[in-house]
Amino acid sequence: TKVQVGLLFGGNSGEHEVSITSARAIIKALTCGSNMNKYDVKPFYIQKNGVWQTGEIPQQVLDSGFALQSQSSQVWNFPSTASDMDVWFPVVHGPNGEDGTIQGLLTLMQVPFVGSGVLGSAVGMDKIAMKTAFAQAGLPQVKYMTITQSNIGSNPCILPKLYDDIDKNLGYPCFVKPANLGSSVGITKVYERQGLKPALNKAASYNHRIIIEAGVIARELECAILGNANPRASVIGEINYNSEFYDYEAKYTYGHSQLIIPAKIDDIINQKVQKMALQAFAAVNALGLSRVDFFYLEDTKDILINEINTLPGFSPFSMYPQLWAHSGVAFPELLDILIQLALEKEFASK
Ligand code: ATP
Ligand code: MG
Ligand code: MG
Ligand code: MG
Image (cartoon, rainbow, N blue to C red):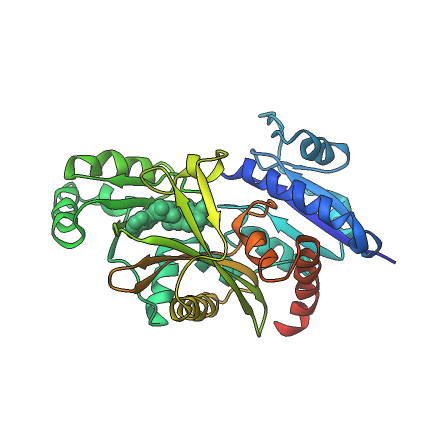
């Protein structure tokens, strides 16, 4: 009998559309070749308002590639067919998906699922918690400061003081980011003090936890990790883009960015990045898969870790599957390995 795979996609986040693209590719690769005889895939679609859809609707969304408009009168529901799944493949990026919420639900259901558990997902998604874990593991990072909306609200003098501290400690350009997002949503590159206020307001509109980082001029390298207790690191990829930074448009508009795999870097840098990626994976307690992003400062040969993504973009053109394809693991095989890792994790985590 085939393994019933629940493919969970969409979700209540700014990365809803990215999730649809990822899910389209995954269902295609799980329903062809040798995977076809192994897996029976049921798509479950989470609308932007959080309502779950089963039956025809998920397939329609996958076929069209477009999000379904949410009806405001709908209330959260949990489909009864969800309990028939043997394993789940959540491809929901960002808040309410990549951050431990779905992982908590699936853990309560006592069904194995692909990727990190509650802890790894939550620590990996929150840039403040993530950086704390990286610092603890001795991984070098850019200088940064953090602030929460309640800090701002509680003391009217805090903002001028924060601006002074940013001037003094981080300088410009700096990057203001909501702590819990992805796809560069809510991030501003700030060039002068006057730009801080709108950037902080923008970040605060997404999340009450905000991080401000010193900007570096660097090459951007990424490494993919696959495995549970003994994970392996892929070849390294590099990202090129024409914009001021690797923003949403550069990420998702055709021709605005290029992936270079393998990255043209020295062997020593290559090995260092792979080692740091594995350390980062362990530092946040990730499982299954992750993509770890780095800044490489060529002049000084410094490598700084930028972040980990525990549920990276998963279209066939995305960096994560491309890195594995160049490391000898083709897309359908990669999905097969991830599901097998999920099934084994049930025992490994005890
Ligand atoms: P992802 O889609 O990979 O999850 P994200 O939304 O988590 O991205 P980051 O990776 O933190 O966002 O930042 C997005 C991009 O902004 C980086 O790839 C880089 O181009 C630029 N950037 C972010 N922080 C810095 C920094 N401190 N110095 C220089 N560039 C930065
Ligand atoms: Mg990220
Ligand atoms: Mg991300
Ligand atoms: Mg990133």
